[in-house]
Amino acid sequence: MRSWATLISDVSFSTVCSSVQIPTLIEELISVEIWKHKVFPVLCQLKDFKPKSTFPIYLVLHHEASIVNLLETVFFHKEICESAEDTILDLIDYSYRKLTLLAAWSTNGEFPDLGTLVMDQNPIELQKQAEMMEFKISLRALSVLRFITDQVDSLPLSALTRMLNTHNVPCLLVELLEHCPWSRREAGKLKKFENGVWHVVPPEDHVRMTKLDGQVWIALYNLLLSPECQRKYNLDGFNKSQLLKVQRCIACTYTQHGA
Image (cartoon, rainbow, N blue to C red; front, side, top):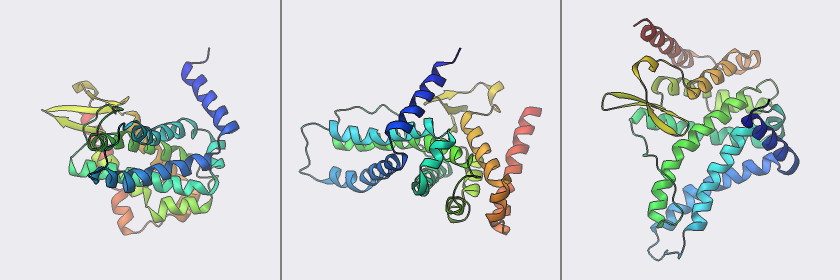
C-alpha cells in the first residue's frame, strides 16, 4: 500500500505538470524575494505607514515559503527540473544566496530565534518574524539545490558553470559541513534542527547523520564525482585545500564513533 507522503508527492507532481509552469513559479519566487528585501524594509521605516491590517503583508511573506516548499516537493522529479529551462539559473542563484546566508549564520554562531508567523502583527514585528522564516526557507533551498545536482547529466552547461565556477558551490557545501548551521550547543547540550524544530540530541545520537547532513553529502557527491562536473570544475590550489576539509569531517565522525 502506498504511503500518504507518496500519494501527496504524486498529486503535487501531477498538478504542477498539468497546470503550473515551473518557470513562472521560479519567477514568482524571485519577485517575492526582491519585494521582501527591497520594499518591505522601506515600508516598515515609513512613519505614516500604519495599515489597518497587515494580513496582505503576511500573505506575501508566507508566499516565498510556500513556493520553496512546493519546489522542494516536486524537484525530486527529473521532468520538473528539466521543465525549468533557463530559469534554472535563477533558481541556482536563489539557492546560493540562501546557502550563503546559512554559512554566515553558522560562522558567526548567531541564529534567528524561530517562531510562528502571526497574521495581524504590526509591520516591525512582521519584519522580525520574516527574519525567523529565513532559516527554514534557506534549509529548504538546500534541498532544492541538492535535487538540481541529481540531474547534472541533463542540465544545460550554463547551469553547471553557474554552480561550479561562478558560485563555487562545492566549497560552499564543505563550509556548511564544517560549521553545520542545523546543529548548535546550548547550555552544554547538543541541539539539531529536524522537522522544523530544534531537538536536544541524546549523547548516543550525537554522530547520527541528519537529513540535512545527507543533502549536503549527496550534493557534494553529485558535483565532484560526475564526469561532466570533473571536466568543468577548476580544481586549483584553493579549491583543493577547501575540499580536503571534508577529510576532517569524516575523521571527526570516525573518532566520535570510536569513542
